[in-house]
Length: 156
Image (cartoon, rainbow, N blue to C red; front, side):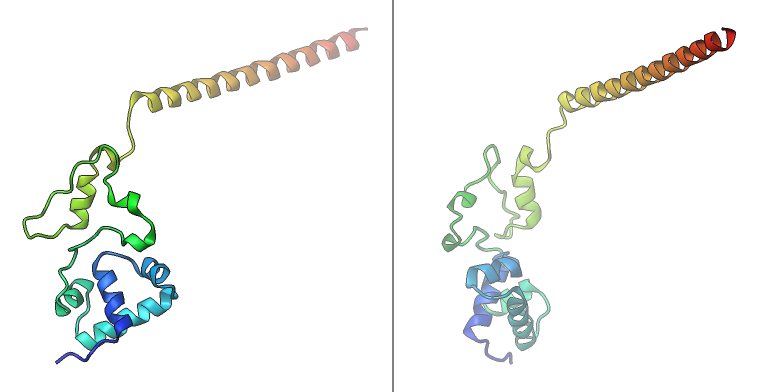
């Protein structure tokens, strides 16, 4: 039978099961990240588990049940989907996976790959080639002028 968890360990495991990382939990609770990691490790040991999902199930918490940011973090804007993002699909098990969240971002999950970027790269390359040729012509002209002056000096 698993040992009883402290209130802080239960709080850390609950937030961890929601999908928060140790650093975020530490900021939310006002404690060091290392302390959060220690609470989670001790809770794992007491529960006899080795993953956040198993710990959540051992405590009767539905893993991934509530992945919205906690209101006290001041992130009301984050609970709304990103502009243009579709509604996050369900996996059929009642939980949302990280992949489901990624797919739910729709066109926002990758930077645009339009012709504008390609045209800018071509124009930059053409500019660099023009500078290179201009430099070669300038150096060649300087060399020929120097040789011509030296030739005139030696004739006189």
